[in-house]
Length: 187
Image (cartoon, rainbow, N blue to C red):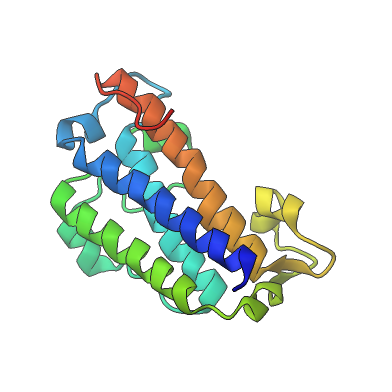
């Protein structure tokens, strides 16, 4: 058994379980709540992370994202964009139209990642997915700081783009739950 792969599989499943717990304990009003200018709604964090896991999975594996015009029609996002390169003002407008459809999209993305990790050969961890010099959109990211001499590897991308990024946004969701009268989910 590979200790790194085993740990990553368990951590991703645990993090995904927090997202499932969050969406099952909120309704559309909670998710789309507008607190005030400059404060992103929970809808932003939910869609941003799920859609970025979907897009990052493509960067790591080469497999096309799940998100498509058909999914946009089903989920009805207020802003059909994960928002990584948009302003906070633009993304305060983010809303989810059909929360049940969003949950289906989220589950499909998370299930695909976990299935990939379940069959991953640990030798893949060292494969470079973005070599140096890193492109401008990547050069200013956390993953650029993590990158080794050869560039960003499969392990770097999985740890940074999938796991650590997901925990960051789960923290935002837990904080925002307090703004809508719900409690945190972990201690």
